[in-house]
Length: 121
Image (cartoon, rainbow, N blue to C red; front, side, top):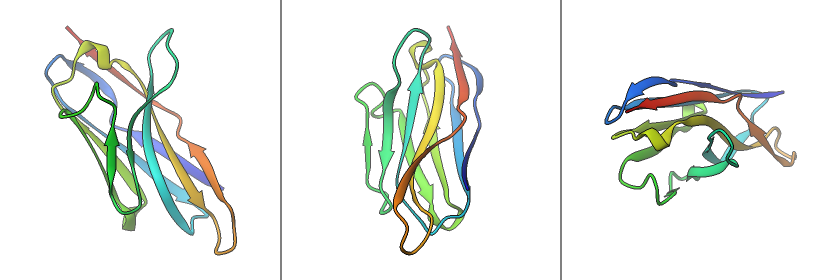
């Protein structure tokens, strides 16, 4: 019923920038917290940034000062502006969201399909 569709990944050189988007669609009453995760080859998934419905944010130490999460509640969309990219930022980036599908429905967690970000030296 709910889909999270990511876009904006690609190949950039170190020091470059990318802007990721995550658009939620389907049966959505409200979206609570949203988050960006990433997973590099051979590593476990890690939290990159989280943002509440009120746009309060938290970031992993490794991306503080370089990445900025934001959201447009009217569009059910979350963004991740990534600046000063480093090779160690290379990973598949995933969108995650807590979605309430109806007025009396439970809040369920959903994942996007992931988008590849590759940063070259």
